[in-house]
Image (cartoon, rainbow, N blue to C red; front, side, top):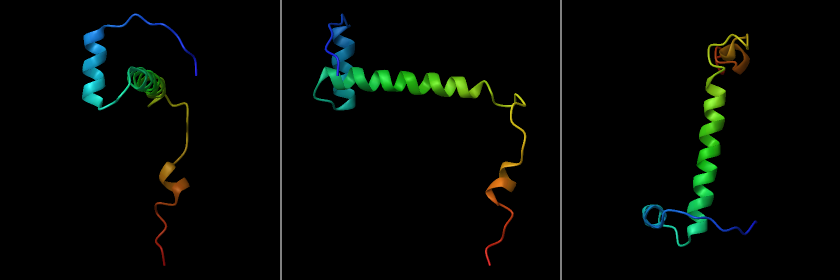
Length: 69
């Protein structure tokens, strides 16, 4: 963990803390940072959709057409 000083909007921080049910401001900031990274990661993945970078049949690889017997 790293201890740091931040200048934050007090009202926004307190509203977020209450809305999320957290006890500390650190929890709010950590969750916000994780969510930002998650969204950024998914945005990066989305740019590869329909790009033709991967070729294959996912249903075949998963065996979706195999009937249990």
